[in-house]
Amino acid sequence: MKSSRACLAVVSCLSLLSGGCGKPTAAVARSNANYEQLVEVVPLARRDLVENLTLVGSIAARESAEVRPQASGVVTSIEFEEGSLVKAGQTLLRIDDTEIRAQLLEVEAELELAESNYRRMEELGRQNTIPQADIDAARARLLSARARVELQRSRLDKTTVRAPFTGLAGGREISPGDYVSNQTIVTTVEDVSKLKIEFQVPEAYQRKVRPGTTFRVSSRALESLDGVDGEVYFVSPGIDRDTRSTAVKGWLERSPAGLKPGMFANVELVLDVRHDILVVPESALLVTRDGMRITVVDRQGEKQVAKFVPVQAGLRSEGLVEVIPATAVDDGQPVVASGVGAINLPAGRALKTIPLRDELRPEFHAVD
View 1 (cartoon, helix red, strand yellow):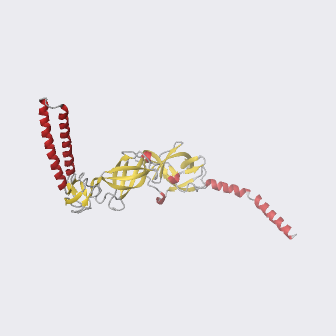
View 2 (cartoon, rainbow, N blue to C red; view 1 turned 90 degrees about the horizontal axis):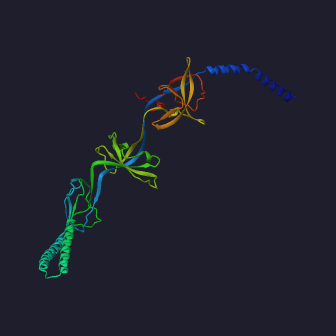
View 3 (cartoon, rainbow, N blue to C red; view 1 turned 30 degrees about the horizontal axis):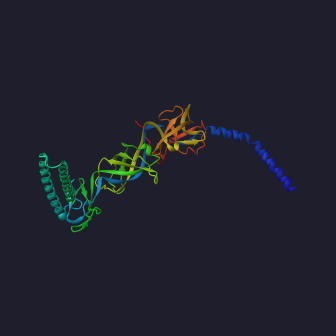
């Protein structure tokens, strides 16, 4: 009996409470209608937007070569200093040529004899005392002797190792008296009068990279280097199957002191530049099932109210995104830019606006 009475008492109380809730609910509704939601805003601005891609590359010399002899033999002299500037064609190394010179004297003597015999054959031929076949054979022997002389002269020339181009000589790998062959590295020569950088671009971005694309190079190893501009001159026509990227090379406009071939460097590649476009912070975009939209601050009399504007998103860079509104908006019109997805903000809600906090504000300046 006590339990039944308690239940009846609870039901009675709930009935009284539910019956008395009508007026308070209406009051709350009127209060919410007049409530101004505090939001942070930025002006809808026009500016140039740049799409960048940051990569890691390797500095390379304009030209670089491992110098190897073309002849085998014993080194008789080395005629360059390590780290010195060498000119194109300058002698770097000499190999013992005693045997080759002796062979050259032998074939030169054979050439002299072949020339003498051929002259006699020609004279006899003019007198019609020998057949033409003998003259042709003498001429063939002459040409063969000349070829042997040229071969020996070429072999003799290869005993001198010369610089392939003007550049800085590297370390010396051999000494006088060493036996060298065409597999022996004598030194390296690098032309650092102009530097280039080599890097890989992921396949998703390779269509935006072409000869003439600009970039900026910086290096953590050189704190004093504030950046060097450059331009792409080569884009590989194929994609590497292992890395799914394409090889790209570019020239640097200048060669800063301390930047050396082989160093790693950061490359900021400019993929796209859009001029005078409407941009908002990425935090101002709200994605719904109907698409993307931004919330602009509109005016109704003296009040500021929320208005939804459907947009299409374009280029993104540095925390900003290009927006293409479906309806007309005014440049400089305030846009809700903070906590968009978390604020319960229906269309027409009264707003109280304050500027977006500095710590949440991307690099955001309208173009003058």
